[in-house]
Amino acid sequence: MATIEDVYEFLKKKAPTYMLATVDAEGNPRVRPFGTVDLFEGKLYIQTGKKKDVYKQIVAHPEVEICAQKGADWWRIAGELVPDERVEAKKHMLDAYPGLRKMYDENDDNTIVLYFRHADARFASMTGAHDEVSW
Image (cartoon, rainbow, N blue to C red):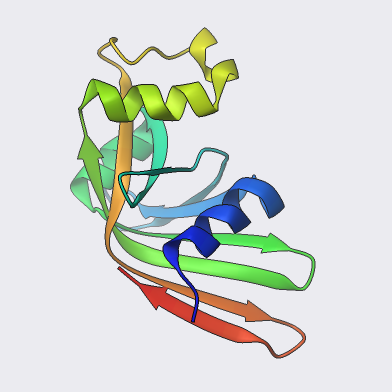
């Protein structure tokens, strides 16, 4: 049985650029590449800026989906993203991605980290392997 740690390891090490799907104000799907992931206090986090359309879309419609692929293997993670304003959570993320510090700081008014709540993650492979985990 897969764990949240398995999902994190895949996103962090095997597929560091994944696709994040949101819904815009008109109800249209929006998909874009993302590259941040963190495991903090047992929760899976992503990071963005509050000024970006993606953040506004998540706040309006917190149900999102990630798809990450490496070769014949992929994970799909669907769930609700919840903003976490705590400096500790932001710092943990930015310490894992020091290159982001050119644009973000845990003490600024723009940086935001969000964690998955009520998530279902499904692993699949063209080889026929599959697994899933929920949290």
